[in-house]
Length: 246
Image (tube, rainbow, N blue to C red; front, top):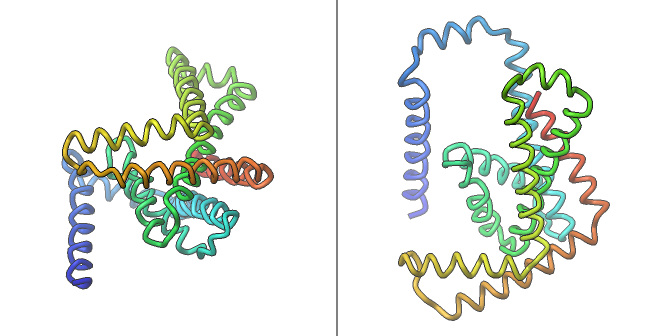
């Protein structure tokens, strides 16, 4: 049964790869694309590949560090796998919404509590957005004239994007630090899934969810008390974001 399931997973993966390449090349000439690749300098391609791998692996390292703070003795290789899984599913789902749910699923399979993995991925997400805001502000301070000259009439999009990311950071921070709001959202989602008949109404599920939310709140408070480690995570996230832009 496991072998059969594995074969179907391979077939699904190859199918997704084929669909991806078809979407990319259906309105483009493969010959022209190959010509462009042949004229590219190998050194820059190698640098881009190293940067891309470093970007994904740094997220895996951050997850590994946060798991070890919570006394989960998970190998770095598994954490790199969580990161690659998230990167892949974010790339094939609308608005990159599929990455973290699949990461939660993989971490749950490795016996990492849902409350802990949710808090860890929320921390990673908030740090990622916060660094983007920080880099936007630094860019404006050190390269204001160049930024205005480069963007021209579209400079308002820079400010609008910065404003939206600040709102996202504040909302995520509020959800993370206020367990009552998180509880309300979890119960609202559960109620919606029951209403559209994706889940059956079960009182025991609500109890499990409430217990999970309680443990989640405890994990968040635990991380808040480890602010030195969070500063380290912030530094690595800054490096990760810089590599992405490079």
